[in-house]
Length: 325
Image 1: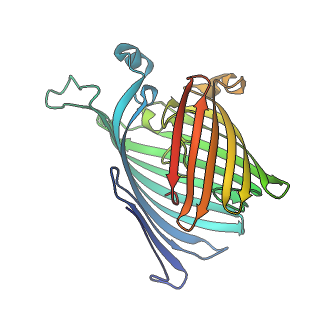
Image 2: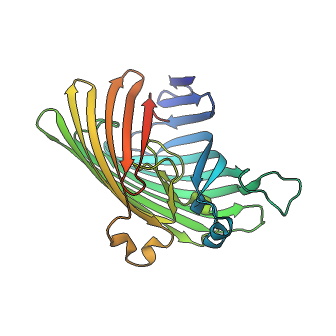
Image 3: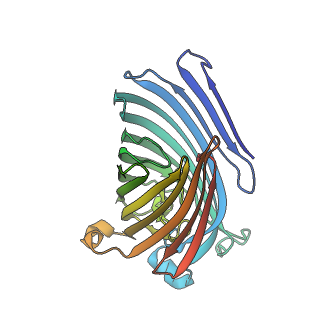
């Protein structure tokens, strides 16, 4: 079940309240309340929860020595993420916005693949069960004509999070920052063919104490949580590191109104300490290709994508029904 409730003028004449709820094998929700003051400082709050079970890259949870000792490439993991934000936002023009805010995050990551031998009462390993507090800033320029199938416009987004404290199972306090940026450009060739070009990257500043918030590439989506980045040709959370660069190019052919046939390719480098040298500027280590069909409907896009990676010689199908949240 996918449920949305939206109400304007809940408390004030210029506010919007919205609740998205997904109920199934994995439960999630996204709640937003926003007081819109246009070019003055607007105020908003957001709360979301995501939970799922999946196999993820061991690099996201284990250091190099631990991975060598266990011999694991992937770990069957249960992840739950509860995040709440308070923020203020202003518009410099209709397409450019600046957001400043504070964030609280509770992140839990456990696995029964490994057993915690130091605790005889546990039949699982707790990789993360921490409370994170952060301040953040975002700058976004968005002139895309369509969020899901853009044919014209420019998209530029920068995000900086400073996690100034975290309480964890070892009772240690750490401070680190995560910066990332994304650039996209879409233009038309003729009436039906659109070209989409994009690049993005990110890096971590500070000690690598909390690897669970590192970058992870794989899967397909428009609204993935934390620092999970979509990447054709690989399943979700297949590639991990504290720094990455990614480039992509795609062609979208709207052969009938609201019916889209598209092909795309993406390339990336990702690893720990990527920006310590010049590895980020070398030929990409990972690549993936996608062939898909999309339909615009009242409930959002309906999509099917076949993806393939020449490095793994494996293919993956991705399906989407409805708006992302």
